[in-house]
Image (cartoon, rainbow, N blue to C red; front, side, top):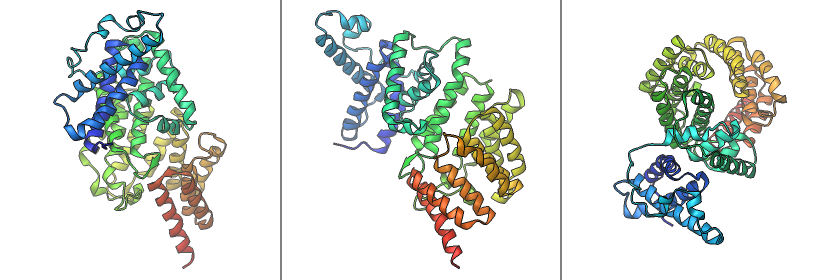
Length: 419
């Protein structure tokens, strides 16, 4: 099998939701369209490296996926011989004709509309997020399952049910009415945040970051921001992504190991992205109701504006985390709040904030709880306990760069104890 180049992989990831959106808009039948798109992507991954990328890659994928969809439905029609008109009942009659118009409208990007379709109110919030991560974000079912901390078969069934519910709803592929759009926006933003988070710190594998996912999340959030420029939380999320992604070049060492924020070379931070993010969140907080994404972006801005780690305004960050925790029932917020409290009030204050998380099923077995507690114990001078928890966190994480970093922290303390 010919392996696709990185450039081809990135192009296919960008085009996949656009092609799926085009097919669903034209033909309906979400599940069959996704199967057809996956086959077209596989064909492109095999052919393009050797034959070259076509002049209109999106049109090529739409054309091939349309043919695959025709084949799928004709196969179904043959299996159901008693239903002579099965295919025309499933899709419009013009579908059975050759897809002569497959390349038309190739410049239209249905990704944003597909994003809102995946966040249909007929679905539960968890299903909205899972389906969008699969159809728009391009994450595998296994990656989504890890993000939700559920078994892969459970997530597979959830995604399948979500696709069938969308098909049964008969909702056309178009932006929802204004009042309905507002209701779906919260789920849309959470989806984009999860895609970005998976890209910023991959849950597993040899690489710390998956740049194709962070790039796609930023691109999609820009699309939403262009459509909804007055929404403070959309602006806040875009600002958060830009301010976080600005540190990308400094987050990995020469061997791919994770470099914590306090140890990063800040001269490598992207100042243009920082300036854009700071401007976005400053404007949003000055004119709109305060929300969780704006607060997270404000925290990221405080970090970004410190020329050195020791210049960080931790008291301001502590206040912002206190506000954020009131708005967001998220154990990760509590973890970060604990670090801020330790920096301002001492490690015992941070350790006290961590105690309730031991009873939180979302975090009790998560490696980051052990890692943060180890860091605070190290600050408190309890080396033995810190070493044990760094090692426990290293065993639990599925990210190789994070594992190396945690093992290195434990080894450094061990060496220090022996001197």
